[in-house]
Length: 127
Image (cartoon, rainbow, N blue to C red; front, side, top):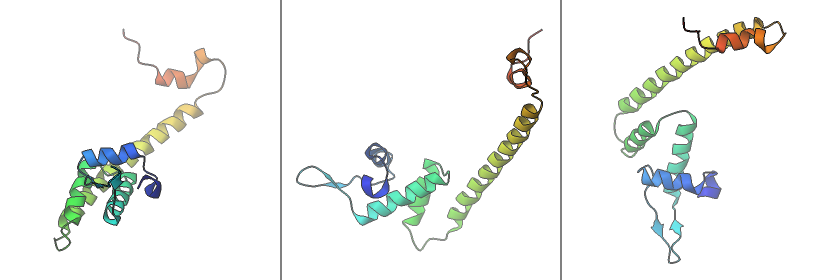
């Protein structure tokens, strides 16, 4: 399964211990025997992680996805909450980008002792 997904075995075991993946059956040689459903579930976890969903959110989404007839309002709520968090992070990153541009543009070269970037990052001197 590691080769099929590119996920390290230690990460797969972590997902098993976290309850996101079922512990697989063992072969006669004591190897883990994964099935297609396990591969699909791991792919779901990886995709959700790449989109920034937390492990708790993923756990809930997986539980919800197991009940195919259930109303998807709970899934929508999780996605909306995550979108709100992403938008907050984007706003923070946009503010950081502006700040960095301002600080960088204030640098006119010279020595580190006169560097406006270092000055902007330094803690305010206590009086």
